[in-house]
Every structure is written in C-alpha cells, then in structure tokens.
Image 1 (spheres, rainbow, N blue to C red):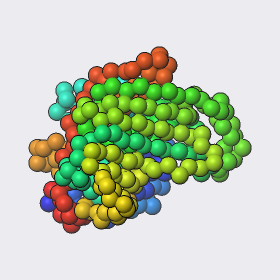
Image 2 (cartoon, one colour):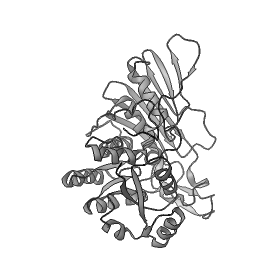
Image 3 (cartoon, rainbow, N blue to C red):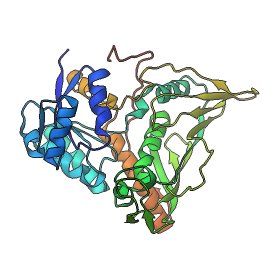
Image 4 (cartoon, rainbow, N blue to C red):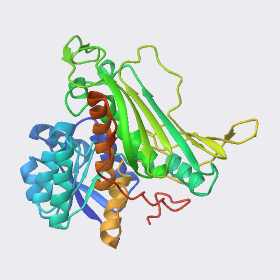
Length: 368
C-alpha cells in the first residue's frame, strides 16, 4: 500500500487524536510534519509525537513531499489556511466548519475544482459504527418511509472546561457552528439533503465568565447566538428539527437524535461519538430493542475521513466527508440564523449527494 505523506497545520487541543489515530488506526497516510502560527509549539508537538518536522506554516506548504494538509486551526482561520494549501497544490481536510462564511466556502470549492484538488471536512463521526449502523437500518427499511428527525445539543457552554474558550463565542462559533455540524451531517447522511430551513436564535447572556484554567475569571463578550432552534425540510419529504444551546444551566435528559418513520423509530447515538448505543422500536411492539453495531470504528476514530479521502484520491472515487457535504451543512446553519433575523424560511441554494455507506463489518485492518 502506498502511504501518503500528510501535514497538520494547527497544533492545538484536537491535534492529539489525529496524531494518535494516524499511527494506530489508519495505515494509508503518515503525518510527516506539523506546523503552527507559533513555531515553537509546532516543534514541541513534533518532538512529543515523534514527528520529524515541526515548522512554520510556510515551510510545511513548501514541502513537495506533503500531498495533503489537515487544517486544525480555529474556525476564523479555516478558509485562509485551506486556500493557502490549495494554492500550494495540496489537497486539504479541515476541521468543522468548512469556513465561517458561505462566500469563503464557495471560493474554497471553486479553487479546488479549478486546481483538480480535493477538499474534505469534519465531522467524520458519521463514518463510525454507530451512525453507519443507523444508515443501514434506514436503508434496509426498518423504519419504513421517513417522517422526521429531531436533534438536541443542550449544554452550559465550554467556558467551564476549555482552556481557551473565547472563540466559541466569536463569529464562526456558537453552539450551532460548534456542534451543529455533527448533528446535521449525521442527519443528511441518514436522510439526504435539505431543501429549506427556518429558525429562532438568541444571545441569552451578553457576557460569559471563564471558570476553567488558565483563564479563570476572564470575561468573554458574546458575539453570536447561544441558543438556536431550527426546523428544516429534507428533499425526501421528512421534517427535521435541531436545538443547539450553550445556555442550558440545569442539564437535560433529551435524546441526541431520533429518526421517525412509518414503521418504527431509531434512537441514534451521540453524533459527536463513533459508537452506540442504538435503540429501535417497531410500530405496535411494547419494548425498545438494543441494536448491535454492524460496522467497525466504534472507538474515537477521528481521521477516518482523511483515510477515506486518501483512498478515494488513489482510486478516483468520491470521498465521503466531502467539501460539498460540509458546504451544504454550512449553508443550513447560516440559514437558521438568517431565518431568525429576517422572520422567514430560507431556501437552500446548495445540495449534495448522500454519502455512500461503508461496507458492513469493515475494520481498521481493511480499507475499501
């Protein structure tokens, strides 16, 4: 198997799991370099991870051996770093969201098409055993025809645990842009693309106080809605709803996602994870059944989207965590906010193909 050399840009909190999984789960790519705006942090991360090269962003992009860049920068930098990578002739896979604005998202996809390069985007949790099993249940007819879906992400905000939580409350952040991609990507993977959306949103607290270290006691000015409820119509006729919030102080017992059909209901696992549990209840049966996973990658498998992308490039097929899927989700999230501001439905301008499911029983030992 040919191994593709990959570089990481952005050596913050989330980078650790990408380094770990590249070594332990996926054999078709190797992280050969890492870079950061803080070069010393990149060098320290390279030493920590046993990577030969910790360097500046410019050095990494100039390296002809690096064929694909994993962009783990903060949301506000996503578009700029992706554009730099594409201009340097490299494929790019970016953490969610694809970009802060729809305009930048379009430019990324247009530049990639112009240069014959690929754009991939997190989340790739929908490729885990949990969501893939749910996709199989739906495709195999267990719920009949789809009626609707609901999703709930109810939290008190990240300032109690994240070491640098400011960006969650700045443009490009908020609960919808932070967590909405997990929920919407999973729903689109299960039920297909969205045609129109509407929503209501608010800023509940104009300032937040950091209670985590090392910034305990600092004040954050809130720029984005922190409680967002959206309703949306899928192209297949099903109706979805999604609430994302950083304002739920007392906790919640709501399910993460449920999918409803004419014959039954599926309780879908947390889309920010890769495994179960999954529950199913068929029409007229008294009890919920626990459904075993039909697919592998139930552990934390972040980076599976990169592995699939590398494989897809080599074989000339479409990759699953695609830029088109990510842009469709980005547009829907903006649509919720825009509908709230303007008091009307927002008609989606984009669409995407529904990602093909992974083979049943696929494990880390076998790729597609």
